[in-house]
Length: 453
Image (cartoon, rainbow, N blue to C red; front, side, top):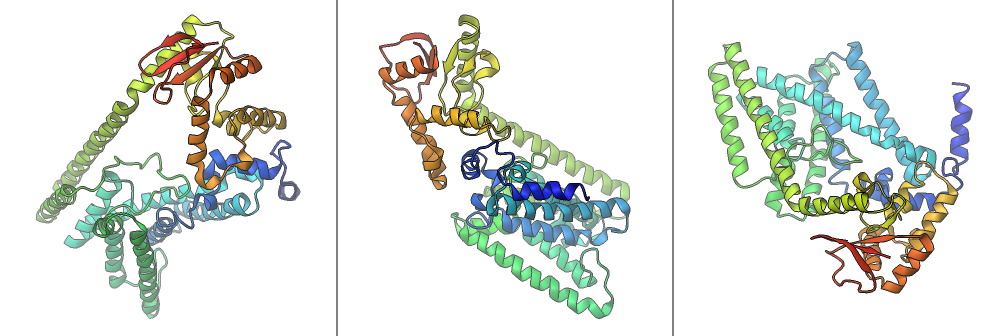
């Protein structure tokens, strides 16, 4: 500890460390342009996007705590998880302070605030356990609410069904004034219930705020926010990779289908309640059907994306294959600088670089001032200077950059070719409408055209 403290102090006192000599204000603004998840305040987590991120995060913590009701927190493993969750919350606060309030590049790169995703990850596991407990031992209404809440976790955008969970907790509080895992005596029951109902009112007000901030129709918003998802699991990086779900949006038929299936399941469960084997069989059938539905929805989701982008992606891969088989190994290409990924994967040819590479990836982690200056020089060829850009309208900056590239005349492209020794330029026909007669067409397909200088 004695050895670590001076090192931490040095990091905090010298904010330029890990920025590679790049002025901290420039490094911060440049990384904000492409890595906004490092900066939750700038991202609007606590302001304009609070209804989608911060408020749901508060709800998830509340439900996580209350779901510990049936857990033995003296158990060493469970206690470690709970303490770890509290530590993650502390790291999240530290990460926010040293990213948006007092920027320190070293700590920004670590991105401590993203550890809060673990809170919701473990929280969801305990909430699921709590719901199973209600299915196995609750009354008919509790079973209905618990099964519905489990469905929401897998059938829609991943989320927590707010109102059903509040009602389940209400039944627990009514039976025994216990605050999550904390045991209380009968004399404190009134205090516990007061706390619960106060929290209920406050969190319900937050939920109503979400509803009225939504641009959708009010009836749809009430259904979406109170009965379906209000939690994106990772408050600083949106969807969690493990619990992403199928992305199914609520449609008029969906609630009726779910209600019918749940009602039938409850009736069957109640009918065979005394037979544990039959009950287990019904629950297993239910989850097999659920998993099959998830697979179907994921497949449909994949096919929608595939049908939308497959032709363009295939055409771009054809360009890469052509480049690999028909150009010199040291040939230098200039692809669309707003097309961030993919060129080198199959072409095995060098690239002039793009907006993300020179404006972020080349210096964000392995910071080097000379590389940063080279990136600024190359981006300036397109009239782009990160220090002059308005970070509140990033999409406009991106569009302007692309328009500058596709608006270049033959003389300007020739000048760039001579300056940087570029051999080929690749144009996407979606944005490049008129051929440049001054250049020879080296390769062309349905979506792309390659000019040789």
